[in-house]
View (spheres, rainbow, N blue to C red):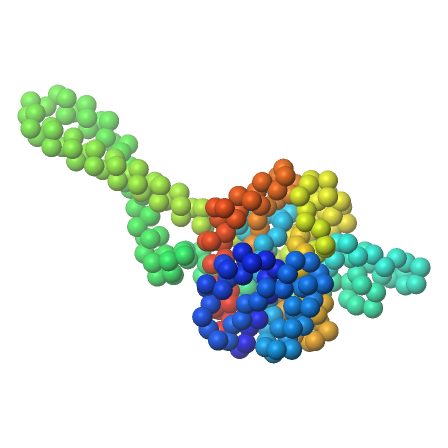
Length: 291
């Protein structure tokens, strides 16, 4: 199977290109916005002839169940900035290009595979699946190590009453070592928990030529599409191009920020500074499940 992946920005391209060395997977940058996305998708289809086309990269999230680093996989897509009016066709919906579907549906097979990949992602790390499983087993002992620290105070009281100072000092040294182990284990356990909170969420993705950096703009968009899970600038344009060319399509978007919980796109900037590198591993796992 030949898989084409389209991203909008250089930093998304850099993240994904390092993850794939299979000749059957091609990652290309189209540029930001709907026109660039459509041109990039058509170019990919004409030159690479993919069996599947994926829109990847980041997006703004919406909904109480959506958090930064979650992945929204498209069940359907439409535009949040298209309105053809009712004067010519009274059935045309807000977000629909007249003569085309009101919403572009994701390919059912790709949607099913993306949701199945949830189970295989849970314990994956940037170092690889097997190491991720090994680390999970190691971190599972963190609670046991913490239990050792809980009993340390009781043991210290007993030591103070001991007449054998040499034995007491030796035991105290052992306890201190275990307390340090507990601190390390707790830190590692916290890292694992942050990885396990990343979810794959199916839902509507809406697209428009607007970088949403204010609560006011996001409220306007969700006023039309309250069920939307993600907002981006490319996915629906790629979906439209794939619909016309009859190429199976799905959008797989990492949530970089939640505009209704953010100010001045601070979450977006923090995402690229601190979280992006490990976030795209989910996309890698999904693509690998197709090969």
